[in-house]
Structures are given as structure tokens and as C-alpha cells.
Length: 121
Ligand code: 5GP
Image (cartoon, rainbow, N blue to C red; front, top):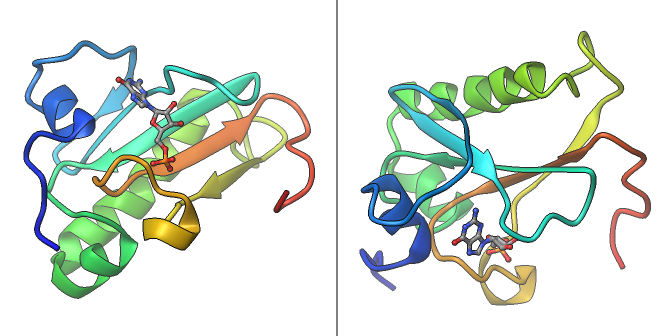
């Protein structure tokens, strides 16, 4: 499967669709989920065109990998849900069909601001 340039997150990255931005740097963009499932529901996406975590693991540079992981931590700090600024959170990436991924651009969901509950329904 090849990357779909017209997926909704690609459009957000190009500025064609607005988002409620939380954080941005060279490697990541973070914004609030349009349909929040918890008090805080943020998305963190790499700026590169990667379909999912497997694609990212195979093709991204070490700098992009570090950038994404660090980006998640920066967003968590900014939202005051990181271990040092708050009470923790859940980071979750859905991967492809069985993972329930809807948007084919790699993204991590960050859920927090309250107890997140059971890991899998
Ligand atoms: P997935 O199921 O692919 O892991 O998650 C996709 C997420 O993207 C969903 O939680 C959904 O609410 C969110 N989403 C879909 N379209 C938009 C949009 O246009 N803007 C924002 N901010 N979030 C979106």
C-alpha cells in the first residue's frame, strides 16, 4: 500500500484543513482530536509521510524517530499530563485493519486528564 496524499492528516499538515494546534516542531505536529474520547485527547503525527508505525519503523530516519518520541513527551508536558507535570496518560497507535486505524497517516493518540480505563474494550 502506498501513502495516500489526500488523507485528512496530510491535508492538515499542508494547512488545507484547520486544526486546534497544540505543538509543532521540525518533526511533529500535534492537535486536538475532533471527536475527543477523554477529557484530553490529543494526536501527535510525524511530519513525514508514513502510513503507520510499521511503515515508520522501516523507513523513517533515526532523527525522525527520536523527534516523534520526544514530540510525544513535549506535548504531554504542554498538556500537563506527563509524569512530571500531571498524572500520566495513555499513548496509543492503531495500526492498519485489525488495529482499527481510520486515518492512514501514522498518529499517536494521547488520552488523559482523567483515568483512561481498560486498555482494550
Ligand atoms: P484512528 O482510528 O485512525 O486511530 O484515529 C483517527 C482519529 O482522527 C479519530 O480519533 C478521529 O476522531 C480523528 N479525526 C478524524 N478526522 C479528523 C479531523 O479532521 N480533525 C481532527 N482534529 N481529528 C480528526
